[in-house]
Image (cartoon, helix red, strand yellow):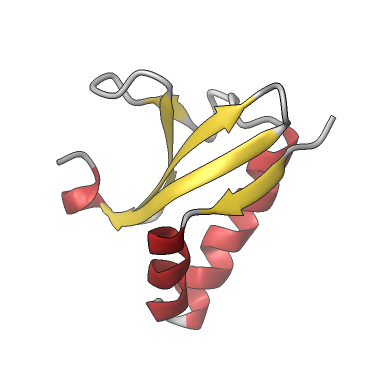
Length: 86
């Protein structure tokens, strides 16, 4: 069972502004998440926002929600670690 990834408009803009190496690393993590977005090895729940999850890629965080009915991972944002949880 594989999930599809959808990027919100702000997430797409942020990804377009990143350097190629960082963007490639984030793309690779999104591919991993399509197999199991709830894997405790690569993601964790955000305690302050029920329903949101985060995945760490170096100093960057992928913030997303999972719609299990439609098998969709909705990426809300890509943020540097210092700004991810504010």
